Length: 633
Image (tube, rainbow, N blue to C red; front, side, top):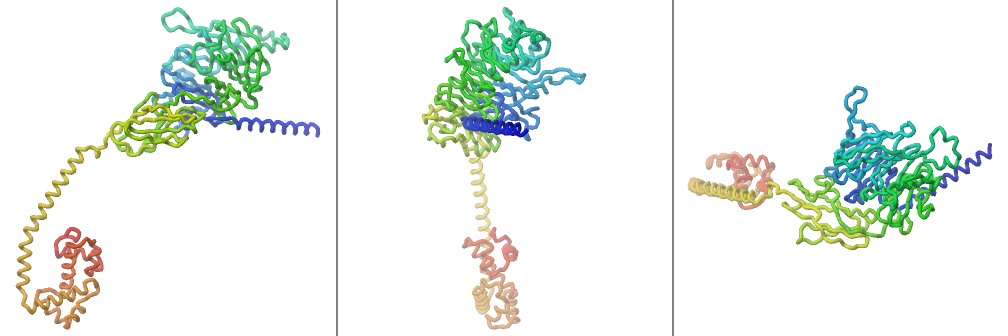
């Protein structure tokens, strides 16, 4: 018992060390997308990379930013499931079709809206429902004519580019339903379909008809041994039988399908078959076992330049089949799918690092050193805090009138060297170029002038070489109501007319009031005797000497004039009919009026200078005497 426990412990330690080595090996892979559980992906006609996997939804990557289309708090009902299993592109429609664990969807790149692929059916007398709504869409592919093939369980569906169901096939083998794991077209436009638990069937299109030809399941291939007689086979014969077909690599003349490469051969039906355990070859007549014990040949791609088949196996990793020999190029990583890009295989894998590049020239995982012509594009923009994706094919952007800031997101779609790319921009031909720092890809335009502006952008490659200038976006900002010249001319005329009117009113008022004030002053001056005038002047001088003292009272004035309070009261009443309190207040108000006319002091300051403790009381007294507020005097 102890020995068994010891063996088990040693085995566990070895497994953990192996897993750790695999993890470290995967961590060292150069990746331009770092996300776990990537199931599928493609590069569309524009150059964007689209991918999906467990919980990711449909994602678009431009080298810097990832835009995700999935159900979340902001869009709770966008998708029934965020697990994306397959996808394909319809170039003529500018659409991405993708399948999830619960239904198929169509994304339009013209406005980046997502809608479910509808297929009406009646179930249990409940009326019409979407047949695909809760189905696991396992495979999806665009044909050369723009139609789309997709499958769930043992149902193989053929849709037109307008999302109309044209045909339906049930995939069965030996009288039993078989789920589809993979399909592809060969050079003769025959659709080959690989089934779970063995078997490959083919569908051919009718020829010689003017109308759109229909497809028919004319031929079934493999296997040659009935199921009830398999026990009689030798182990070698059983080993050569096809099991679950996970991938098919067929010749094709359609270069738009990224999943299948051209394989030169005399027979149009020549292709390779990857199954759950082995690699086979079909030459149009018979199937030959090439390599066994591979454990899940998930994906294959053929390089015409090197006449080499590359494949992914769970047991062997990334392998190369050439010259009747299988060579392992990379192990310790569990990949999911292969795609060729030039001389570089693009690897999609599930687990640690996301998406990485394998350089087939040096057989090392590294970034490709070749650089295509740099073409900067607008990927998205932000206006008033709201981010929107740039619609497919659009070259002009119309902004709202009151737009203070526009943020323009750029990319060259050079995923491996995004951090080395440098952008420069200018609004019009006569302006200087503004260069951004390396890795910076956002242009911020503040207070964009009204009218039409042509945003020119250029970029560098990873070697620092600038591209030729190109006008990539036209920005149109309508003039706001306050930016029209005629409006400001009208406002200026109104201001001039109003000023002329006010000046006329003021002059007229001065002309009418001046004679009256002169007569009043003359009457007041001539009314008093010399002795009375000398007394009033002496009293006014005493008040003026204590003008800033708010506590200067009637008693203080009487003391300064060397008389009693009662005598002061009787004398002022006899001369001008005022009480001593009124006399002191009027002296303060007259001084305030003088300061308002000759200085720029505020009302509060003047109230303090003439001895009023409260500005509000000063304002009240001033209006009672002069009929206007101090600020309007």
